[in-house]
Length: 496
Image (cartoon, rainbow, N blue to C red; front, side, top):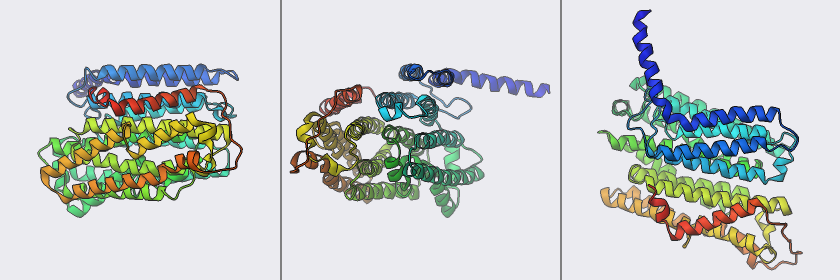
């Protein structure tokens, strides 16, 4: 028994050294427990749980920002996580998304009046937040799988918790079934990786060298299986089937959250795996490079082309999300380390644009019952401010100046062009051309909204909006950021 005492001591030292880097997660865990107890003891109109959640997420975000100035150099917790500057930056971004979701829920009357209330929903949000924080710093396949499961299970609960009809229940069931299958496939692929390498640390050069020693067909199959789990969270092709139905069937605040926060964590996880090859002596395997390039190209094409045929606002945004995922994958292929500022800028722009669109869409749905794009006819005359802001978000999603979306796509195309000049691989040209073509295609479905609102002649009675509420104010602030970051992008880039 005495022989194990030094090992126990080393284990405790390893845990103790890693604890300071998990301060945001400790804050979220304490907040999670507080929201559970406050939810049990809540009164009918109590906002105590919401206040606990908002304060806890804010503190977690502040501590994440502070961690940027004292990052870890080597992985901690026995090589499970790497809380570096990039991870701390994305933790702060996840906190911002969660805060926006809290505001969204607070001003959403259908959720506030739901028989189940929002207390448990906010507790689930905190659990997902912890999973996302760990996902952006994970450098071990086991930790990556656990965090994906934390986020996935919480997302299932979010979608199903507020279901009111058969359509929403069907969307939740599809989400659960598809996610469960993808999770099992990913775990099977990880068993191949571990069986051939004897390690799960995917930033370890020995692990990467052992992967290269695998038979090529086995490596391709295992990589496909592993990418299944990551692709499910990113909803890139061919793991996108769940997103249109879930986006349409879920409550709009939940849809806005699912379209943004999980993508931040999943793209960083994939980026760390791709970056690990460039930082080691082993080059990224060409089959894996071509596989991700094909995924990016098809995601951009399918997402934007199918979006043209959509008439429902949330389904259109679902396919828009798939198209933007192709851009994210394209960014990490260029050079994950040097392109991290571009990746972060693109993620911030995507969060600002998507959250703003869903907030305004939810406002129009709640006030007028409008869910179809054709129902927006004439709203530009009766509600010029709201539809003008929504149009500006559409302009940014297309990637036109002077918005943040234009700068994000310009930086992406510049990174791809630089990559082509470095090694002249024709794949880069295909990525660049596809990105440019799909940006033009995006005009045809994003601009359907201003077309209906401002240019369609209608005999319908003008719909007057209600009083200005906090949700509209937040949406207008996001619109202001869309212009500010588009005109002065250095504000964001200088942070990195």
